[in-house]
Length: 136
Image 1: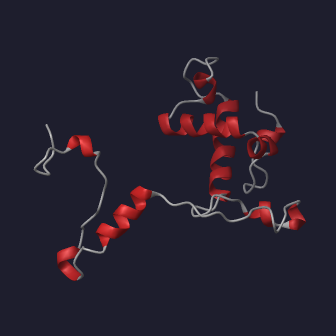
Image 2: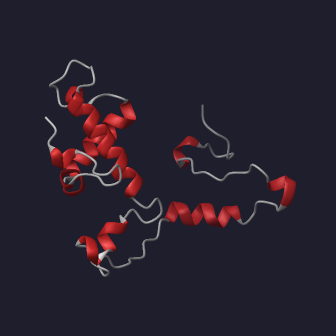
């Protein structure tokens, strides 16, 4: 059953449990993806949305909206007035070879109308034969 820590406050902040419990967030993310209530996911429900399921789903949505789409942090984590820390994170550089290949190939896409809608993707080498065409 959901407690007050699970409920969004003032329609703006997710509860402390949701912020602190990475496992619960992962479960709720899957529930959202599969459009099922949390109680059903954990094997305790019959597939109908209980009040606790609705509270958790709403809290998760509030949490998700509070996370920056680019860096994945929440403003409160940086705000010292909300017990955050201006130096809570440090940067790190990660190189993804797949993204590097896509960026390199993207440079060959023509400017203007010829390049409109062109999207570069990755396909496993095993899916291609010696002539550079897709295996079926």
